[in-house]
Image (cartoon, rainbow, N blue to C red; front, side, top):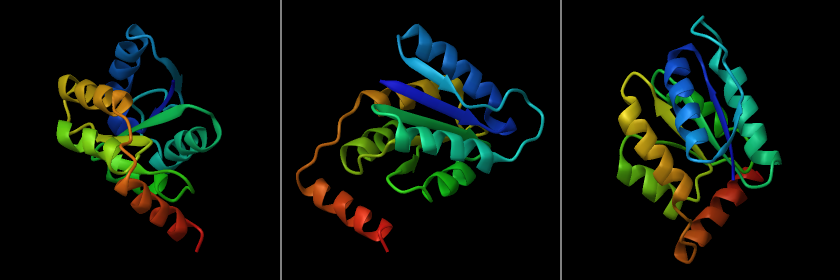
Length: 146
């Protein structure tokens, strides 16, 4: 699996920590920026990760800003992207099992690294359950076509 990760300045430090941890666990990581703590515009980086998730086979995404909200709003504008704003282990798990989410969004101000890495690993390792949830995900896909 490939992991595409991006952040704005508010999530830069957490992004850098997650990249190191994920590489240590054997994940192939694509760093889509930003490249430092200077103020940048989060939509640029959300777009880069969302496009990777759309176009690169077997890719999941991680987006980080101060709250995670801005990144999730932008990412969810892209067809086929289901970005989940995650704030605990249950949401990380259920976003994959029930919603087949393919991008996890984190708020760096509210999510210390020790928690973030737990959420990310759950997100990356959990599978979509299908069954009744497939019907609902297909309904989301229908909305994207309108």
